[in-house]
Amino acid sequence: MRAREERDKRAGMVADGKSPVQQKKLERQKLTAEMTLREFGEEYFVEVIQKRWRDPRNIRRWLDNDIYPPLGNKALKESTPAEVQALVFRKRDHGFESAAAKIREVLKGLFDYAIACHLLMMNPMPHCRCVLLRVHEPALGLSRRTRFASTFRRFTRATSAGNSSLPYT
Image (cartoon, rainbow, N blue to C red):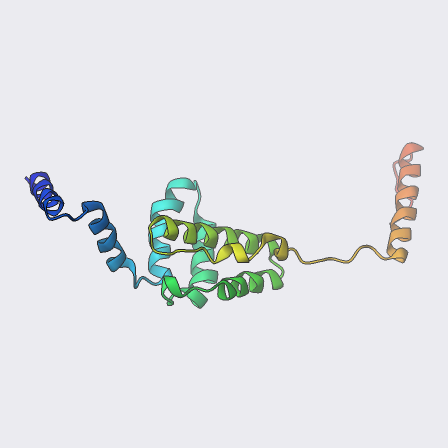
């Protein structure tokens, strides 16, 4: 019975010159235009993450501990590239480069899904480049390099000579 009512309703809309698809999009945008990042993140987690990931516990932890506290109560449309970049860089600066890259990946997927749902026009995440997540570590200094080379030479001599004891302790 319900399907027939829906059909009649849509046929009436077409007769009035309105597109049922456009109306549905507008209704969905009205419902979700004021969604916070937390509300949309939960929808994203249920609709995308749980269906694609075998074990989504890390993503749940990143959402709850890293993404929602600073950005969760903001409207989805109010998220700026500077805010999401600061969030990712904060994680990187604490020494968790791979976690920062994964958080960036989760946020990029979340915003891409918002674009697919016609809630956003642009994704703020492409402005936060993955290359910038790596912290530059200086090369070995000359003294450390020579110390490493001499230790390596002693080790290879000892092992090639068949000596099982290492020449250093």
